[in-house]
Length: 297
Ligand code: ATP
Image 1: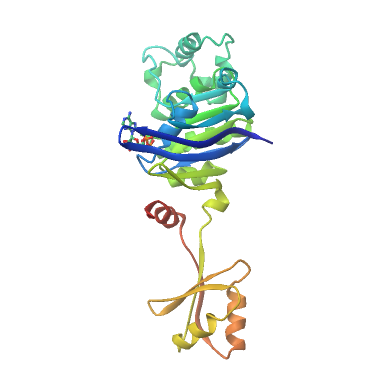
Image 2 (image 1 turned 90 degrees about the vertical axis):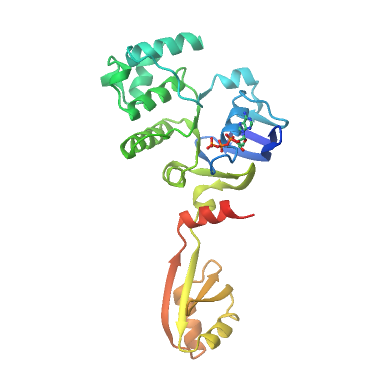
């Protein structure tokens, strides 16, 4: 499978603010691709550029391996800002207006309403909807015309936990239907739960990009202690596969290469006549890894 979107070295400044400082990334077909970063990191700017709403100062991008942009754009549905729906009209009637504005011709409102799980409520007035339902309708509007790719900017903003869960389920369902999804969010939790790939932005720089399980894999440390921690440290510093040994609050924190676990550490200590009185694996939480990544520099 190829890439649906490829971005090369995009830069964008708003007067003195450098919003994007040379971003390059690729979104594989079939992915749920998260653009993650704190507020002001450049997520909306990046989405605006690839959706042709904003002009980059430099760099380029291609949808679907260089398909002419007007053709490609017909295969990309987007939700950058919440659309204005009429409160006194039903979901079905509201989508009629969206369809007419887009001028896409085909009336696929019923399929779309089924896809976003509003088929039972399609004739209810918009004002009777919960916030989660309103957001699902907004996503429905972006799905008119059967796009291959859906671009969503902070789709769970302002929703309660139930609404957030509804959107998360919907994203997974749409992805199962074969739609590639690009989603901007400042919530690590959201990205971690639904995304297959992630790009982390900070102050317009791309910090990390790749599959979620590689990019956001929590780091593991092995914690050990013995009667004589000084001697233990000097022995472990010589152990093959141990990259770092740090003494912290009376225990040693080891950063090891893959394949070195507590069994190997224990064995090595026994072979060097050291009896351990403490040996555990500590996982750094994703939260702390994300904070560390975005706080660097
Ligand atoms: P948020 O989550 O708050 O929407 P974001 O990651 O989407 O943030 P952007 O909205 O892309 O970030 O903003 C990136 C930077 O560009 C910020 O410093 C922002 O203040 C600035 N910026 C965005 N739009 C404009 C504009 N129209 N004029 C001037 N500066 C802007």
